[in-house]
Amino acid sequence: MSVTVPTTRGTPAAPQAWRGLEALARQDPELADLILGEARRQADGLQLIAAENFASPAVLAALGSPLVNKYAEGYPGARHHGGCELVDLVERAAMDRARALFGAEHANVQPHSGSAAVLAAYAALLRPGDTVLAMALPQGGHLTHGSPANFSGRWYDFVGYGVRRDTGLIDYAQVRALARQHRPAAIVCGSISYPRHPDYAAFRDIADETGAWLIADAAHPAGLIAGGAAPSPVPYADVVCATTHKVLRGPRGGLLLCRAALAERVDRAVFPFIQGGGPQMHTIAAKAVAFGEAATPAFTAYAHQVVANARVLAAALAAEGVTVTTGGTDTHLVTGDVSGLALDAATARGRLAAAGVVLDVCGLPHGTAHGLRLGTAAVTTQGMREPEMARIAVLLGSVLRGDGPYAENSAARAEVAELAGAFRPYPEHI
Ligand SMILES: *Cc1c(COP(=O)(O)O)cnc(C)c1O
Image (cartoon, rainbow, N blue to C red; front, side, top):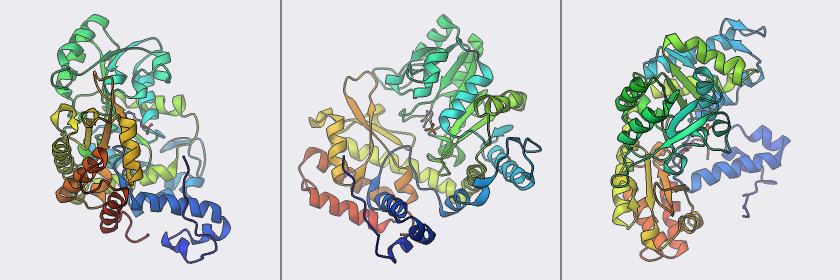
């Protein structure tokens, strides 16, 4: 695939289109061009990838700070390196804010990613060879839930549960039957594409009955949970894994929450077990900033708007001929089958990409075909609301069918440009 980078070289004013890039543009115009080009790509298209969002300028400022220079192996008050007095306060602030935000007894803010958080949760509770019950990958499980290509599938013995054929909802009777049959050491709830809330109490009950740990992989809904727009697994799960960059809108990274009784096991699993080096203090500072933002009434309103937008988008896409999985959504996620439009998902994604709309292809439970997965976290951060969701659904339907108002690529691109122009993600910058 060829990529057009809007070049700014030789036009000294252009790098100022992103504040702070001027010095980089003077030293390294090649990279400044690429960074500015990507910032423009994000701002000029419609970003419907369900796992993406726009971090605030405050989060970006923390990420680009001299904290990146600091080695701080260990935990606050117990570091291998000197000079950690201030970064200790940074990490303590991130931990305190995470605990308060999620009502958790303990938080570990060091995992470099969501996958690292899951790896640490397994390391804290399991031994290699243990049996783990998790959502099967074709039904919506993540790579870290037992893919043979991932550490999880190689080091643990995974059994997969799924969703009901008739409703698309998690089959709790099957989860219970598999737990009774296989006696897993842990049960994992969490998915990359399930658009409904897991029933955490039901999972807890099954885990208790069968003597399993319960691990909630809340990588996707963590931001909705923080904003009070989704139920929390914290009272039910032994360990909760999350990312900080999806709906939560912070820096790219992971987070672990648990009860005080498991704090030491979880902490040791992160350092020194899976991350035997320094934590990323700049990212931890940015996580603290994001947790601070997520504790505000504005974020609560945001999280609820994300869900309201996804509901409108799901209903409007159904009206356009997309078969929406589970008939709708309770979250930021919408998945759907486009085979009713006589399209395969890869072609559908390509057509939309040509119009400037970016989303993912995903597996569909029980389906042989793939579907589309989209989310409303990013467009909601841009300020779009229900009327814009209706416009987006009409745009998508028209482009996918190749008829209606946006059958011509130029018309589709103009509609994307109008929406993107009216809702700039970084109005101060570009
Ligand atoms: C996104 C995701 C992860 C992985 O997060 P990364 O930061 O990309 O490693 C893990 N589990 C689930 C359910 C996810 O959706």
